[in-house]
Length: 314
Ligand code: FAD
Ligand code: NDP
Image (cartoon, rainbow, N blue to C red):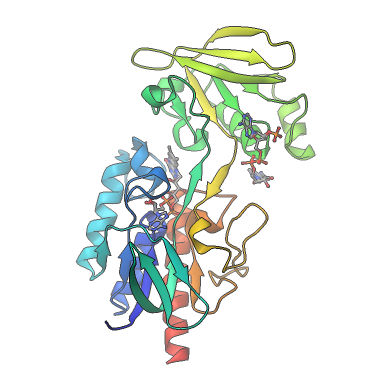
């Protein structure tokens, strides 16, 4: 078998943007789109949500599934070969690099890693049935939907994301309650100061959700105070997890430099990783912005970085 010029691993907005750009640059990319890798369908995290209202070009909004379907179609139309397989492991010890799926091996001169991240959930009773029916892991994405307007909402978590998302939700909600599992926030001082100035937010300390209730959408949550062990049920219209994300970087087996939360480290202002010829884009290297459009942006950067790498190395 020949050696691929570039292999793209992952099929969210980052992977497909990298694929469209590398295909248009004549690099005939091969994409491994995953097969329920990280628990999501090919197309990535957006396939798990309904309305995307902040991706430019869709003033009437578009469903996450349709948006990713269109990106996939555009990748293929421009000349990308897509395999519905999950990459089990890679060997980056020498070039060409090797990519393994189900014991099949493919070699490539360069690799773009676009495997995304998975928002942590708690897998509570009721959570699966009510997912995207009042329960979400992305307040910035879903919080502005009509169902949450002027309603009492809950954020689970006490880090910077939780505070930022609680503040964001106050634009729409009548009230926001944060469930914090300790008696202290992990969030930075500056974020805590902003929180303290907002009288729409209250905090339930030492508290965790135990169970979610609702027929067609979330209506109640059972909460436990883990200090007093007292349980109570609260009427609620929305619950947002902000308890961190897990980047899908495990399959790399630490062959690339990661930060202390397992996100791939990239050189500032580029998508280069610690291994020459291997590039990373999207949420797998971004613990901060985590948006479709920023992922697509870094996907474009990765494609241009690959093109430059292949020209200078050939
Ligand atoms: P992902 O979308 O995470 O895609 C990565 C893909 O790689 C997945 O398909 C995965 O299966 C695959 N993969 C993983 N490991 C492997 C492997 N080993 N081999 C092969 N494939 C692999 N952002 C917005 O801008 N607007 C929104 O409205 C919005 N709504 C959201 C709603 C929800 C519920 C969630 C969870 C997120 C939302 N986001 C939104 C965030 C947005 O989805 C992400 O920022 C974006 O999808 C990240 O893109 P990505 O390409 O980096 O990775
Ligand atoms: P963090 O890991 O910082 O915080 C996660 C929060 O969720 C913590 O309060 C943690 O509690 C809580 N938590 C974790 N697991 C559970 C659980 N099972 N049940 C209940 N609560 C749980 O993640 P973030 O996403 O908030 O932040 C990630 C990084 O991004 C940080 O470095 C942060 O500073 C940065 N960031 C910065 C922003 C900014 O500066 N504006 C905005 C957003 C993120 P505990 O504290 O007890 O562990």
